[in-house]
Length: 316
Figure (cartoon, rainbow, N blue to C red):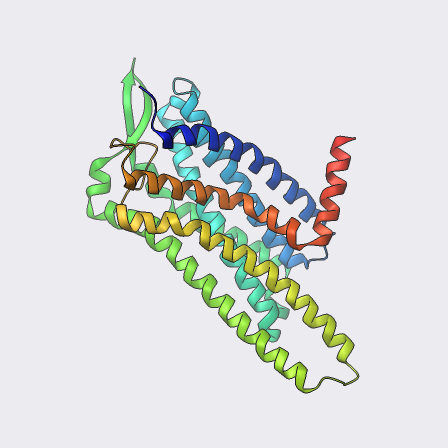
């Protein structure tokens, strides 16, 4: 009997996504770390953090979780401890990708709209501290995943496979955790990103009106450069945050309407619309970890130049 179409899509989609995502994000980290793209050190730090989170998603979530564990069911990846570790790291890396995007959006808001706070907040040391603290909190938030799975079978006293604990996800604590992690967690970042973007737009519009009222002064050339710099920052900010919201929206809406939280260990009808919608949502969600490098190539001329140099160096 032929496999359902959605399963056939997963078999083809995830290996290609993993291969492209690992290479693309690794090259992005190298290029941004060189700091020759004309971006501030603080902005580069957040963008490197975003690329690192995306790389971890590609390695653990896509390659390890959806490719190797699926195709090598009776190998090292079949041990319960390894399976539970992948689930834990998978959840944490996705949270890192989400909240690092929020941190980047907030950093751009402060840099453009808050002149006084900018001098204290927009520093490399502050950015590093914020990234490390956020990472530690996200690891703590994902700890319940260690208790959400149980061995699927025991062979010769060796635990293999892992499946969701029904008593965990049906308990009040498990239901609350599932909704917070799969529903409130994406929507809170959506709201924060939307809020910071709206405040940034408002500030840019006010600054543009003020500039127009004094046009013709001696500092007009300097202001032109300032507005041009802000325009490029806005394009970069909106394309990153906009693509993130669009690609995560399907998964978030799907959970609210279906309640399916784990498609890997799904035991229902693989042709059901609820399962298909959820799986497509996951595909788009993972794809969001590959879009930033495409955005950098499309919007940042210096990034394109550095990418060409890196590709030329690797091909030599």
